[in-house]
Image 1 (cartoon, rainbow, N blue to C red):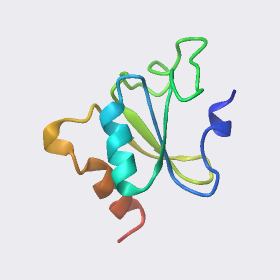
Image 2 (cartoon, rainbow, N blue to C red):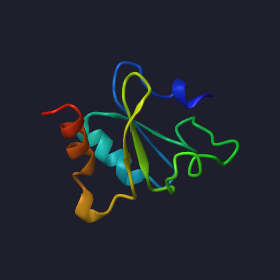
Image 3 (cartoon, one colour):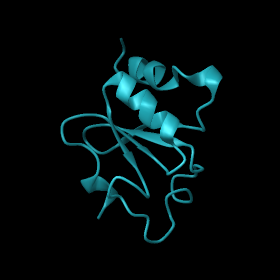
Length: 94
């Protein structure tokens, strides 16, 4: 399955690796769909998830509804719990 088949569908999507559970929680809080590569039916057959976007398993991509990457987030820490909400606010100019 292509990553393009995982995103879009009329809204923003957070894409993260297996270790990105905190991003999944942040996405749910923001009302955004989240896909974890290696789970959620999104298999990483070639092990390219971390290499291609240059992120580790705890990083994430925020993908716009048209499939373009809007923001890249590093590993989420306690001090950055609002990082996703801030990124959305900046992207949507709210």
